[in-house]
Image (cartoon, rainbow, N blue to C red; front, side, top):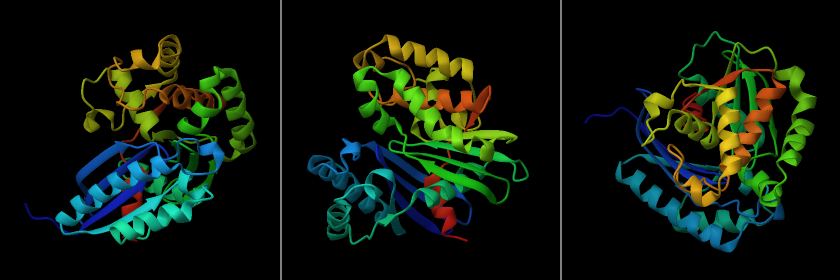
Length: 295
């Protein structure tokens, strides 16, 4: 197979590590991988745990090696867990020593920008869009058409809020915290013609809604996830244990303990936005990061 210009990026997230190899001339994904390493375990402590750093580093090394076998340049960026960690320099040095790659630790606004670029790539340019990216440690909100009009990042994510609220059975506290964080920004993000969701929580909810035996990006991309369905899934998740969640069709292994928090965050966000649903994008900040480097 002949390719144009191959670029690779590794996304070092709070919950998962992902690799994307893309042909930037054709804007085509060649390979995509995801591994859940839970780098942000204990994220509210302000420190990355030694065992989490080691298992994450092992995955990164494998991904970098695989990308280099394709003969392409490799970039890496890190989001919420790393940028908020007091010992991030230790982790960044570990990655540099083992892979020769300096990790780009992006701030919340940059994370929002690349999320918008990736999510918008497969939707009409002229629509006024709101992109919501629920990650493990933070959630980004981005509103715009061809260019970004408003963007911000809030410290609420599936891993962070699982550890803060779900493990102590306080989903009401979670809802209140989402409202406290988001309500001051509502006037800036209301009025979009289309709301688009990205990130593992939202793509997994789409797969669960469709009861997919195997994840199918072609079916997930553009899927309209209704609020009624989100509430139905959340109620079901509240009634079963993490062990029982392993039998939920469409749910990625390793997300059993954090999917409830992510679902509740999304549910409350859409409630505050007075929206009846959200379009799902399988393209997100990983695609957006590579595409942003082409500008």
